[in-house]
Length: 290
Image 1 (spheres, one colour):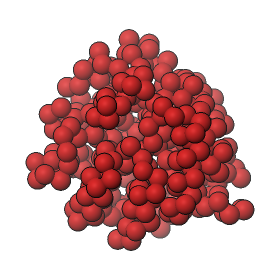
Image 2 (cartoon, rainbow, N blue to C red; image 1 turned 45 degrees about the horizontal axis):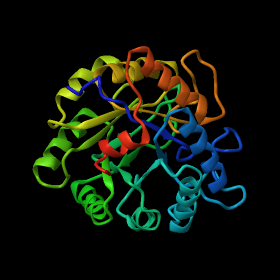
Image 3 (cartoon, rainbow, N blue to C red; image 1 turned 90 degrees about the vertical axis):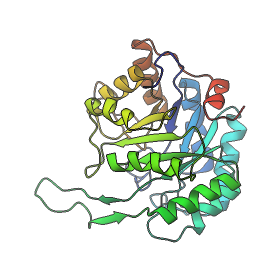
Image 4 (cartoon, helix red, strand yellow; image 1 turned 180 degrees about the vertical axis):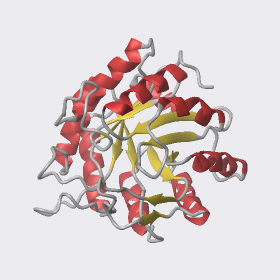
């Protein structure tokens, strides 16, 4: 099990994939992303996880893989918060990988999410109808390998996103097959309706399935139910993540309009259980970026 005396790296996921900025205060433009990164950094985050939005007027609710947008956002954040580490999303449906790969090349993040397995991405409404047409978030081994190879080429640290238990176990096999460098970095995505639930009791079992020496964090999606998961993660030695991509709600149920209060609450959660928070230098060391 991980060492709970070691500093916890705090990541902030600044904006989601499809959240409508006309309804929720999520950042879209490079300046807005830099503003939110600065708020997160001042609150204790040392990593920002980035999705990119269409910059055209009225289109900010849509994702984009435009490498110029990725570079503009990366440059804006680095100018504002030069000590922060950037983590790019690469999550894409189907086998059209050119957009995410172009963004990695243009923005040159230190870290990138590597979706490590497939999931039936489902959600039901209260009346039993589908919230959206059932879809497959497809990440076959060849696709995982292609992204892993690109990350290695650009000296980017892969962070394996795992939506289900079998995907966690697959990461150990990827490592043994030589697809991933040591140590592996794992993100436990908890709270997606058709994936792992956001339940703290699952964490010790999941950690036990990880390769020896793995670094891990939880990505807890939901409302108040996610905060016991964050607390247990801190107690067990995992790293921590929050942000407007994952939740809009503080532990007391207050809805936020900025990433700063979420990071402040996460840092307080860790502090309450005696877990130190990583400095930028310590975060770099965790990812082997010294």
